[in-house]
Length: 431
Ligand SMILES: *Cc1c(COP(=O)(O)O)cnc(C)c1O
Image 1: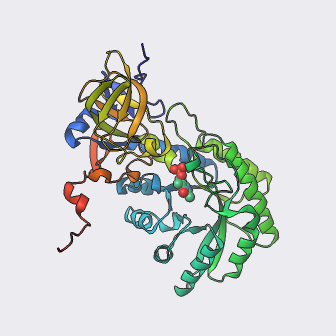
Image 2: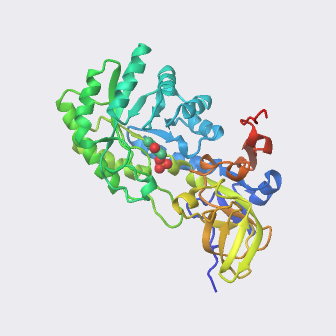
C-alpha cells in the first residue's frame, strides 16, 4: 500500500490551514464553503498567516537596524499590499506598474526601493516624482540614464549599486541570480569604477550597495559569502571617501514546500550584524527584500477534480486548475503539497494531478499518493508566492479569483475574470 499524503498540512502553514473533523479549514472557514461561494479554481490566502510571516521579520527589526522592503512581485494583490503597508513594511518594486500598485495600497514612498535591469524613462520619472528611497542600479549605462532623467527634473536620484558577488545560492538555476554568468548586477571587479562614475554624475546621490543572489535559499552561508564581498567593497569605498548609509542583501529566503528548513530572518540578521560589527560597519542599515518568505505559505490554490482517468501506465486526476493558473510546477518542476479538502480513509493510489491545458507540462504533481473520487476538492499548498501573479489567460481561460480569509470572514480581493475580460483589450478587423 502507498502511504497516504494526508499526514496533514505543511507544518509551517499550520495552524492557519488545518483539519477539523476531517475537513480542511483556513483559519475559521472551511475550504468546502469557499468552493461553494466562489467556485473553483480559487486562490485562498490566510491573513493570520501573512501576519505571522511579517512578525518573523519584525523579530529581526526589533533587535537590529533592519528595514524590510516586501519584494512585491511575489504577490501584488492590492489587499495584500495594504496589509504590509499598514504593518509598516517598505516595498521592493521592479516596474512602474508595481510603483503604481504600492502607492495605491498606501505605501510610504520613502520605503520603496526600485530594482530591475531594464528601467524605462517613464518609470524612473514616476519613481523620482513619488520620492522613493533608492534605485538599485544594475549597470553603468543605467547610472547614466537615471542621471539624465534626474537632471531633466532638476532632482537628485538616490542610488545603490547592485553588485553581482559571484556566489552560488545553491538553488534552481532559473532563480539563482548572483553568479557571474547571469544578467544581474555589476561584477565585483567593476564595482569601484562604477561607484567612481556615479560620484562624477551630479544628479545622483550614492546611498547604498546591494545584491540579490537568488530565491528559495535555505542556508545562511550564501548570504554570508555575498556579505563578505560587499563588506570588502564598502571598506574600499570608505577609503576613497564614499560613505554609504545602507547595505541591502536582497530577498531570497526560502520556505517549506516539502521538507526544506529555511533559517529565521532573525537568525540571518544576527549573523549579518555580527559580521558588520567585526568589520566596524555596525552603523549601516541593513535592508532585506523578502518576497516568497512573507507570502508563500499563506496561500493555497483550491481546485476540483473533473475526471479520474486510469490507464495502463498510471492514474490521472484531471482538475479544473491548470498551468495558466499556477505555473511553478511547469516552469521549475516545483513541488507543491496537495491536500484533500475532505479526508478519506480509502486506499490511496499514485496520481498524476494535471490540468486541462493542451501541454504535457501542464501538471501539479506526479505519482502523488491520494485517495480520490470524482468532484473531490483539492488544496494545492504554498501558493501564496509566485502563484496568481504568474497566471495568464493561456487557452483563453479566465484567471481565478483571490479570497483573503480573516478569522471567520472571507474577503473577495479579486473577482473571477469573465469571458468578456478575456477579449476586453482586443479589436476585431473591419473587413
Ligand atoms: C524577486 C526579487 C526579490 C524577492 O525574492 P524572494 O525570493 O521572493 O524573496 C527581492 N529582490 C529582488 C531584486 C528580486 O528580483
